[in-house]
View 1 (cartoon, one colour):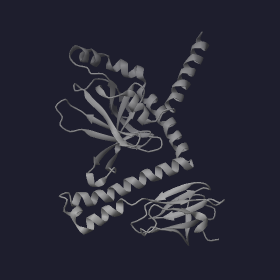
View 2 (cartoon, rainbow, N blue to C red; view 1 turned 60 degrees about the vertical axis):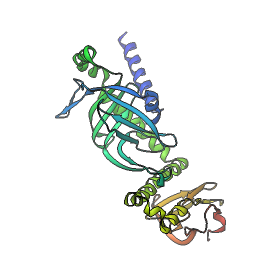
View 3 (cartoon, rainbow, N blue to C red; view 1 turned 120 degrees about the vertical axis):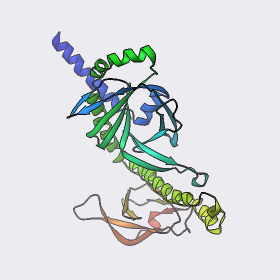
View 4 (tube, rainbow, N blue to C red; view 1 turned 30 degrees about the horizontal axis):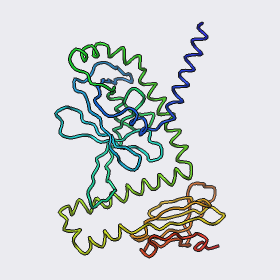
Length: 323
């Protein structure tokens, strides 16, 4: 009987671990759903956790679209609060955590949103609990600060929950459960980022964040609209509205691209990559460094000149690659 129980226990752990790796944070957050959450407390001292007690205030969580299928989680911590805190996915391919961030948008930004991240503050959504983390350094170094559970508690229900919170925390096995998820999730994130599709999607995501930051600098400094009504502002909006230029690798060889400030990209046969057609700068062909599979050396072979003359065009690599 003991052996059967042990085998059953191991099986449940394996099933639980496997389920963690199937869904990213956006899926888990959407499944968990909006609404009111009770807030369990976590105390960390001398390398040990004590999960006991609840905050008398319930938190309200809501979700809104951030980019495409990615969600922004907004938290209202107190019923009387007039402001909310925002958390954004840490990655566009397979989010493992949500990072606290300040989001700025404006009609002049179009669909872009500027985000200032506070990297050390994160949340992780699992199947039953939401973990609020602080002092984040990486997936193995962080502190559990508070733990949320779906449902609002008050009055007698809150008092009973406080009395049973230590036992509930012990049964939930928070530390191991959270760490197992993070191990599985970051492994899967790495696997997805290693694919050509994952690289391309994340490159686009990071490029949009960088572009949004540049646009927000202008919006912030000219929020009264005078800039956008000026000749320079009108020209800038016209420039931003131009379609990207696409480089298509129609050759039989992998192309190594060098552009911007130390940016690299590996474009395999049959793949295509979009670049902003304006703003200056060129895209060069690169070569792999000897005994180095990740860094390239830039050649003088210009593949695309981002001078505004190629907007909306698709350029075949075979027409610009020099051999």
